[in-house]
Every structure is written in C-alpha cells, then in structure tokens.
Length: 171
Image (cartoon, one colour):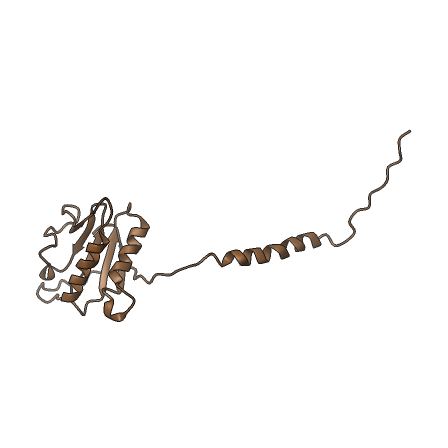
C-alpha cells in the first residue's frame, strides 16, 4: 500500500507581508532612478489670439517686427519694410523667396544666423521681441537651438532678443 499523505502546513501569517517586502524594496530603487530624470522648462510666449488692430499708416509703425521662419532650405527673415537690410529677401512670401541664410553642408548655418541677429540687434538696441516659426517637418532640436541663438548669452549685455514667441508653420 501507498504511504499516507502528510498534510503540508500552510503559511498562517499575514498574506500582505510578501507584498509589503516587495514594495519596500522597490521604493529605494525608484528614488535612485529619479535622480537621472531631469526636467527643464523654456520660457516661450504663445501667440495671442485677438482681432487685428486698426491699420496703422506705414510711416507710424516703427517697430522692427522681426520674424524668422525655419524651413528645409534655411532661415527666412521678415521685418518691417522700413527696416529691411540689403541681405534680406525682397519677396513678401516666404515660400516664393529663397532663404536669407541657406543651409550649409545640409545643415542649418547657426553661426551665420547668430551673426545676422547681432547685426540686427546693433541697429535696434531697444528691440527685445522675436517671432520664430518652423515648418512641420523641422526637427524639434533645430527649433530649440534657434531659440537659444536668438536669446544670446546669459549676461544682460550679450542678450539679443530675449522675448521669443513661437508661431506655427511658415508665415
């Protein structure tokens, strides 16, 4: 005949203890991993939705109205026509005009972009606003880099255009 079965004794303690042990071991692990996650915020002005102001005569509007559009061809600058510089495109539409700063070696020429912004800032010391826009297929890193270059350095003397407003698409 077979052996009689022995009854196994079950765990008679609190059934939550193994789960609590697991949680107590996971908490330090999660806290240790949180050190490697860093968040950064960028101050950017969103475009305001409003009715268009009454048309001002062209000679009364003295603001620079600097707008830079980033396309797959390069950088396009738009300013108030009375402040237009010789190197800027004379076309009124970005799509029909060639870029003011074309891409260099299949990459955006940020050194030239920075030089042109410094030239504009030297002529318009009081101006602090810039509007940046990009085509939908432009990488996010390019837009962020353009924002960094348009703001300039961290010292107040070296700042170019610290108030950056983003716009969607190419205007």
